[in-house]
Amino acid sequence: EAGVVQSPRYKIIEKKQPVAFWCNPISGHNTLYWYLQNLGQGPELLIRYENEEAVDDSQLPKDRFSAERLKGVDSTLKIQPAELGDSAVYLCASSPGGGNEQFFGPGTRLTVL
Amino acid sequence: SQQGEEDPQALSIQEGENATMNCSYKTSINNLQWYRQNSGRGLVHLILIRSNEREKHSGRLRVTLDTSKKSSSLLITASRAADTASYFCATDASAGKSTFGDGTTLTVKP
Image 1 (cartoon, rainbow over the protein chains, first blue to last red):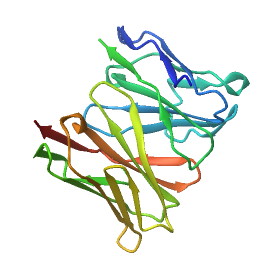
Image 2 (image 1 turned 90 degrees about the horizontal axis):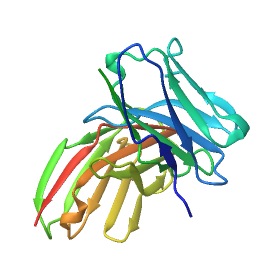
Image 3 (image 1 turned 90 degrees about the vertical axis):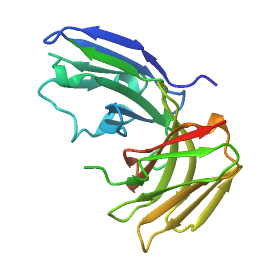
């Protein structure tokens, strides 16, 4: 069984540029999460989807961040424009349902110069 | 701020020794999960313990949960160099919303 796939693995951009991350969850997993992880810290939830519906986006900085999960499968997280403080690892995870174990992708390491 | 807080922040032991790390949280939970993260990788789920359970085992892992003290512990017995990683607890206070602590960094010296 394929795991959670994320791309790109690494991204370096200049500040004020846009950037997008892509996630393909495990087949059949209805719940999809985007997390931000800073060095030495635990993941912080940005947004959680149940199928194609965003059920928790309270921590998503909506002035510059956006996400979508069309057809309830793949998801894209976008930042526009990026700021220096956005440098972090962006993790995607999926789960067969809320309250169950989450399966994480390898993450995208973003560096904003 | 994080719901769960791991203690200690860092732990260094010799191969073969046991490693114990703790997690404290603030609000009532449905379940608590432990994850491992190797350097530069995504998190890997280790074990889930529900609020009505007190202890769970999986291989060399033993997890306890004390809801009265709002705390959990993860014990790794007979540690190996390959156990070197960061360990995070995640509390689920409402279905599907997990809140992670900042982790314990475990170093197992061969």
